[in-house]
Image (cartoon, rainbow, N blue to C red; front, side, top):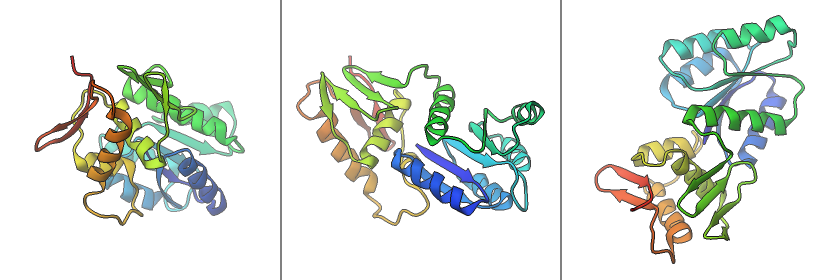
Length: 224
């Protein structure tokens, strides 16, 4: 899944990006509110993390701009302010969650998972389709009782498919949610990774789960 981070403390910014990347997320980031607004205006994300006290535009301003664009992307505020009134202001301004510095990265990851479950209408950290399961916490993937080993990008693509079961995903949508701005690969990267996933997820099974929709993209669904 693709995450956007705006945090002006450069060391903390780098650490969060590193940790989230290790967790399998695709992450774009910046250090000030004005740049955040510009990026959010032209790119879709699955979740946004905003520091409140940033130069050029604070987190509240960025959030108002995001909601003004008509985007309902879940937002988590990071802040050093821990007074109840500050937390209430953050939540009432349209944020989905609020985390006080210093914080544990395990808690940050858990809160991101919770926000995205709500965004996709999912109630469990373990996603299922047919005899395939994906544990969003441990990143363990099982099919028919057998564990499947995936690369980070294969896992990210499968997670995106499983959150969007029954929905046709275009190549552009998949690329936008699985890769970040730094990606400089070939134009057929989505097809290459679809091929990898099919071999690991559907190979050897009569019931296929990943299907091509000609001229539109791909869909994950259980064939009846």
